[in-house]
Amino acid sequence: MKGRNIVISSILVLSVASIPFVWSDDDSEEWQEYSRHSTGVAKITNPVYLQECGDCHMAYPAGLLPADAWQRVMNGLEDHFGDNAELDPSTRKQITDYLIANSADKSDYRRSQRFAKRDKKSNDNMRITETPYFRHEHNEILARLVITNKEVNSFSNCNSCHQKAEQASFKERDILIPGYGRWDD
Ligand code: HEC
Ligand code: HEC
Image 1 (cartoon, rainbow, N blue to C red):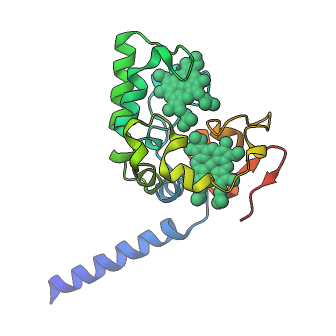
Image 2: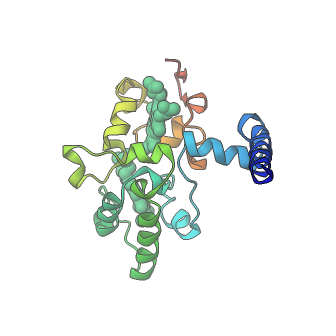
């Protein structure tokens, strides 16, 4: 019975050890990472991407779009939503590889798995704001809070409403729409 006791006591040790981790409400790194897995997407880890793709808009975390959509975005940088965002070939390749390896369909973050869901329009989509999950989450938000709101302008400016978008967190309690206030649903 000795073997069994060891098994039982290791189970006990393991579960006791994980309690403070799962239940604490502190700001420790472990807790933040655990919480991000279930409610956020992975943070950006590539400094070149942050620098090259974070000038005109926030650099979007890779886990917000599936790989094929990133590939299309990176294939068309010379005409990027009306702007020229061209890069030299080696930088472009480095960023493309990073985005694809960390894309929504390759991520184990729950929120990314939702962004990876597809519909009829997904085959040529290049926008986070046109993914089925994005549209579903934002369909109740009125145009006057976004398009004609000078402080927001476009749904593409995630960080004007999601205060922690650049830290890859989209929790409801961190939403603040300029000129409107907190979102209560
Ligand atoms: C010269 C400015 C500029 C640079 C540099 C730039 N972008 Fe953009 N990007 C834009 C504009 C403008 C839009 C359209 C925004 C809108 O519709 O409000 C956009 C939109 C996007 C969107 C779609 C957002 C949505 O609506 O869901 C993605 C994805 C994107 N950019 C990725 C990138 C990546 C990756 C890079 C780096 C290779 C990059 N951008 C660099 C100007 C830029
Ligand atoms: C005009 C403000 C605004 C902008 C811009 C915006 N969002 Fe949101 N977002 C909201 C609001 C409000 C909700 C909550 C909607 C609801 O629950 O009815 C929401 C919900 C979400 C959710 C679900 C949160 C949850 O806990 O269920 C995600 C994920 C999200 N947004 C991501 C994004 C991303 C990514 C962008 C940029 C591409 C973006 N949003 C741009 C206002 C905005």
